[in-house]
Length: 279
Image (cartoon, rainbow, N blue to C red; front, side, top):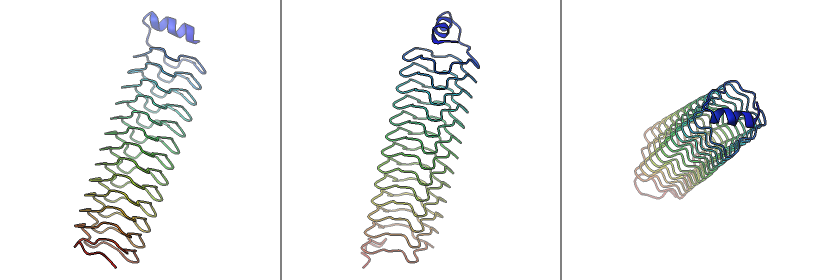
């Protein structure tokens, strides 16, 4: 089926295009809201600027497709394959994307507010300045993902794999990261105030100048982490492992350090829980 035939059938009221073979089809700037493309092949398709509200792309092949600036609000992308696709600036508000494959996908500046992304594969994807506020990303794979300047306020990333991820300058206020893996991640200058990071692995992570005010890091491993100049005011660090961590000039006023492991940690110039500066 070519673009002309599809658009003709859609205009006539047809909405079911299940398993259609539409590779490399050009449907840019078209309105196909409510269409059903479940199991279809749209690899390398041009859907740039299209209106795709509520479209069913469940298990659809969209490898290398161009979906930049598309409106995918409430779309169903469960188990869809978007490997190497372009979704830059697209609107995916409240989209269902459980177990979607977003390997190497460009989602920079995309709107993913309240999207359901549990168990999605984001490995090495580009999410620079994307909005993931209130999104659900439990058990997602996000190794090596670029989240520079992204907004993840109140997002749920429980048990998410973020090893080697770049989150420099990201907004993580109130984020849920319990049980997440962030080993070697770049979290410089991030706002993690009131974030829930209990049972999290931040081994060798970079958290210099991060705002961890009121964050819960209990039972977490920060072994070898760089927390230089970080704000840990009223942070909970019960039973956390901070051995060999760098805490130079960090602010630990009123932080809870019960049973915290600080063996070989560098606290030079840090302001301790009692307000005293460590010499």
